[in-house]
Length: 144
Image (cartoon, rainbow, N blue to C red; front, side, top):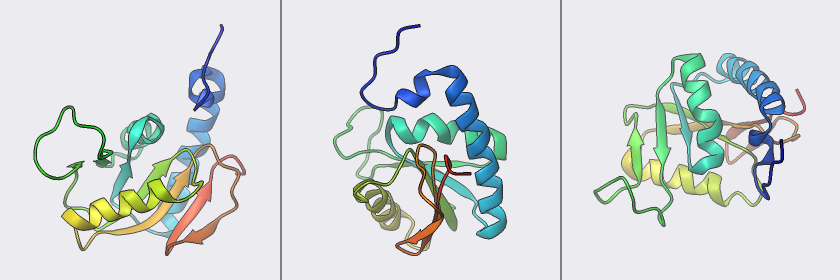
């Protein structure tokens, strides 16, 4: 198998991705015990790669935050679709680098669901030790 990817190469290797999925599911259950949540929020390919898997495994609804540059498959003046009834959600993505994606997701959800609170983030391609980021519990999956 010859895989060419400059970004997210981890998801294109079935064996490696399977291991990451198992670790992320375990981390998601653990996070649910630490900080209860009712929705999984995500954006882009990196978030979707794991969010759909977690949604099926946990039986939990999704909240997709579209990037403002993405104009296909939706109409209206907001960039959200999914569970607008969320109270506490986590963000699933590959990692937090500059925090721009994290803040963008939180900001967009606040516009449409002002009472919703981001209680955590699972970073499935990160070695980050558990820590707080803007009041949310962040957990890197690769170190577990």
